[in-house]
Amino acid sequence: MRISLSFILVVLLLTGCASQDIKRKDGSHSARAFSVANLVKSDVDIACELAQREALKSLRVLTEKLYKRNPQEYRKAGLESVEVASARLFDEVPKWPESHLAKLNWEDSFKLTFLEGYSGDRVYAFMSALTSMVMASYNHQSQFYVTDELSAQKLYNSARNIEVAVWKLSNAKLPSGARYLVSNTLEGEVPNLSFEREFGKLIADQDLLALLIEDRSNRAITRSIQGVASFVFLPI
Image (cartoon, rainbow, N blue to C red; front, side, top):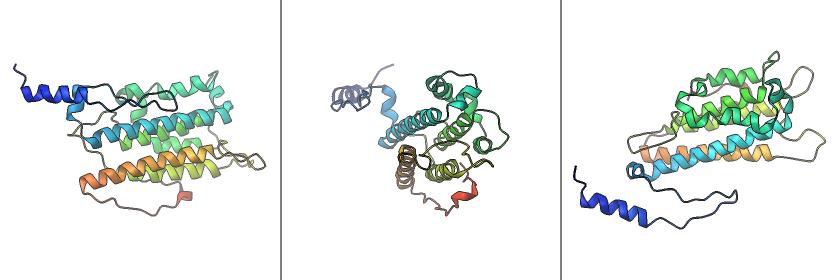
């Protein structure tokens, strides 16, 4: 099979004209290894992959924070550390299409978190639901090409659902008055709004990508007024 000269020139051009590598605060690098697969990706496809990567980073940070504030939860599962407990969830990401989490009923899992009689790991129930719901907004994909099309409505709905889940996490209490899960600072403690900031970043990333997809697809998002206290989710 002959390869056209124009194809070779495009490959050489893309290989030789990579932008300067940037080292991030966490030690990672911005440079992306060249792949022929990138030739069938648009700028929006690459933006989708980057947005998903940032969303997963935020989800892992939130999982670790919740386990640190609620160590009794991973101990229920017989796990010995925050790192091991977090890995139980995020080791599923590389094999996502085959993972049981890709088929999870995330609405039921959210509600299980705040069921009084539930004896399992509430952090896992909450964060697996959140991760599954976010991945559903990306059609459970991690690679995107020009033939793929994400739904701006799903991404928008996921951002609103995160707001509902965050409100419930921050306000739901057991009959004893104790919170189901400790997140932001308890009354009388030094203010710590790190959860609020990380959730805000996740919501903003989903909303921004929704606007980008809306602009590309010329399909307007139906914007809904949703009562966060109702604990009712928009469809994904």
